[in-house]
Amino acid sequence: MGQLRDKMYQDLTLRGYRARTRGQYLRWAERYVAHFHRAPGQMGEPEIRAFLMHLLEQQAASPATHKMAVAALRFLYGVTLDRPEVAVRIAWPKVPHPLPDILSGSEVGALFEALPQIKLRAVVMTTYAAGLRISEACSLRTTDLDSKRGLIHIRDGKPGRDRFVMLSAQLLGFLRQYWRLERPQGTLLFPGNSQLGCISPKAVREALHAAADKAGLRKRVTPHLLRHSFATHLLEAGEDLRTIQVLLGHRSIRSTARYTHVSARHISSTKSPLERLPHQESLKPSR
Picture 1: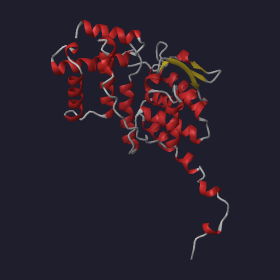
Picture 2: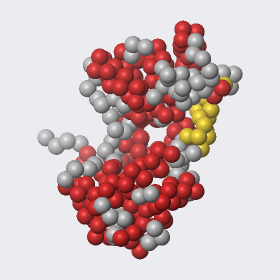
Picture 3: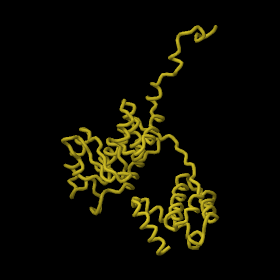
Picture 4: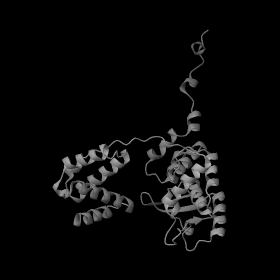
């Protein structure tokens, strides 16, 4: 794509898109161009439709993958190529939102015990204890922990905002134990093996999968499942949605409200309107 790729990168950067999103958009634009071996300026809606149909029918793309491809092409045509009439014709796909599995408290504990290395256990425990995204947990620095106030400072979280979350006494005690044993150099709380950066989210995901198998958990365990479990367990403990929204860093309360559909305890404790009806003879079972 050459100069066009450079312009798209600049457009994404100037509009404040995060590095990961910029990379994904550029890769989809490159795949689109490679599919037809033509410049995108020479193509339009028919080629876009053909490319998206290829993804769905030939490559069995998931709804989330389909949506990312659409977002990238809408940006390419609507912003970089300044052809909004093409961009608006690319329909947004409907992405299903299945309810996530939730780990019970005993399952979370079993997962911790199944992690062999104290560093991995510390990362996973931090992810669950504070409801962090895995990238946020991996990139923490010692200066982000405020033990006196019981807070963790999350810097540049999604969508580019800082926030504070709780630093539990139990987590702090475990992190101090981890620090005494590992003695990591520098300010990174969880440095990687190369000492050039933090531990990689991929390494944590792989360790979680292995620990879940070792613990005999049948659920698909990911770092984000720990975040879901954190929010659900808070809700079941009586915490309000607004507080959970702030802790998770959600811009919209609607993103947080999905946990009301997950919490079994929240659902089972809700009274049916039948319970509120006045006592009537018609409610008694007939013989």
